[in-house]
Amino acid sequence: MIIIVDALNKDRFGDLLDEMFKLRARVFGDRLGWEVEITNGREIDQFDRLDPAYVIGLDDEGHVVSCVRALQTTGPHMLSDVFQVLLDGEPPLRSATLWESTRFCVDTQRLCRDGNTMKAVSMATCELMIGSLEYARRSGISDIITVIDPVVNRVLKRSDNAPYDYVGSTKQMGKVPAMAALLDCTEERINRVRAFAGITHDVFANEDTVRDLLDARQLAFAAQLGESSEWMAAILSGSEEALPPVLPEDIQDYCRAQIETAQTEEEHAAALRLVAVLVRERVHPAMHRLVFQS
Amino acid sequence: MNVDLIDLGNESRNAGSFVSFLDQICARFELDHAAYAGTNPVASAVHGYVNYPDAWKHHYAENGLHRIDPTLLVASRSIAPVDWSRLDHTEGFEKTFRDARDFGITNRGLTIPVRGPYGDIGMLSVTRDCSVTEWEKLSRQILPDLQSVAVHVHDTVMRSDVLSRALRYPALSTREREILQWIAAGKSQQDVGDILGISHRTVEVHLRSGREKLYALTTPQAVGRAIMLGLIYPL
Image 1 (spheres, chains in turn purple, blue):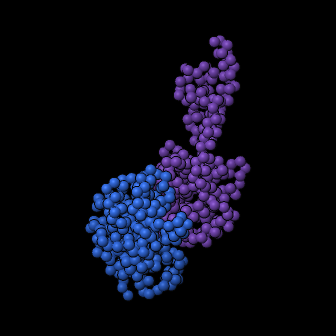
Image 2 (cartoon, each protein chain N blue to C red; image 1 turned 180 degrees about the vertical axis):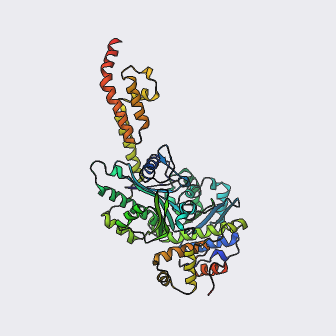
């Protein structure tokens, strides 16, 4: 399912944006080796501060699995400000009905978990393409210029969504080549991608439904932690003196490091579960003793 | 775009001509009212033109509604046109439009935000008093052309001072110039595509960009202006 997050609703979906910036850091920084700035495990650049619109793909649990960013070409955008080299020194196209799309990516890691195949990746990719094209189309936009690498270019071609032309030429940007491709937002193109992926449903999710889903997930997460939360709080605050000496100091240090260096929500949850298990196994006997003593 | 709007680029620019352009927009797109508001940081100027009834204009100004009106404040941060139904849960919307009905102003409308290259922002808002179905059908139909018109109004207003005009000298690419040159030579878009070995769509997207950079609404106007500026040769 697809959700559009822009300046008008980002106060409701800050958690989604945060997850998206982390996904972009993993894809563009770690996997593709683009020269992007990553702070605190999040890839955020100057264009993210210009109130762009994000088309974000979510899985059934409400996790971000794909995203792309859109800006108007009448104002500041990447091709006018940082990617001019792709245009061979020519001024960029500027039109009321042309949007620029950048930072197109899909979370192949998450989608291929649990024995899923590349089929899931392809579906998520197509859903994101359909979402972007339909969002642009209903906004009165006729064409999209998109900055991509040859890999995404191949993905577009294979999904019956081949660019109808390119502007400028392919150039090496840091470690990878990049190019500017043109896509029309016609119904014919949208229908082609839909037919390729076999997607007939409305790809857009209702904002309230998404919010409920995210809230429910957070509640479930909190409940899972419930029983060990006291120990967690004590461990995290570093006030080990307050803790009964149940976990050896080095184990406590190890747990704290695991929690602090967790990169994803899963890793974080796993680190907390580990503490819960250790505490249950080792503490309960100790607890009994404490209780007896008092 | 097939429009019967007078191109603002040729008009002597004064408030009257902008308001009459808004009237034309309403007539052309079957709308009740139109309003343009824009800020130009280069000239430190704020511009506003509306064709609302005077009574509503006075009421709006007297009550300082521009300070809470979400169709200005909120919509300006979107990149897509904002249908006012997306704003009706906001506090400012209720306050702004509570009285509007008494003045015969509908809350059925949309705002097209425009971003310019120098931090300038403009908004073209249009309204029409009609049913939801009718409105959805109309807005879907007029949005592409209205997007272009909004940028046209914005660019023209932003060029109304000397410094901004100098900054906004049309920067056409080689592709845009050669397409305009062939059009000036009397070739159709299809011919131009064949001559240059590019798709019809590529011709179209460059032509549209070229037109807008030249502040023209139609291709003949764009060709005329490109010749005038010495960007292409007269044939």
